Image 1 (cartoon, rainbow, N blue to C red):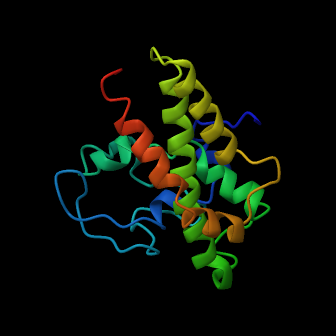
Image 2: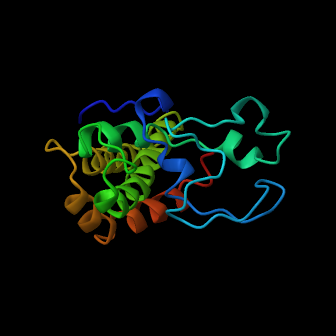
Length: 168
């Protein structure tokens, strides 16, 4: 299994969390935003113009959000540093890849956390199997991510975690 960085690096990302994802006006977000629509606080250079005031401005959801490193991975590994702004014909493919990669990274982080639980040998082996499936030796592509999303592995992992509820 290759070691994957599971921490966000916004400096090396094309702000996918600020564009690809939708949010509804609530106590977490100050307004409704559709998926694939840039947040109105996003600058041309993929920065947030209210970053220091997110909570005060009604964006506690942004403060709490963690991409687990999926953003910079999609930007740099899958799309060679290209931005959705500069390549609008590829934007939807980028957003779709980000959403799946976020799931991959979130599950990798959860599996890493599961290793700290008192697991039996079968459960430890299953964690390793899932980690290997989520970290293939060959690099992810938008096509392999899309196929993986419908492979059923995410459902298997969710089912596995339900079985660990007594261990947490």
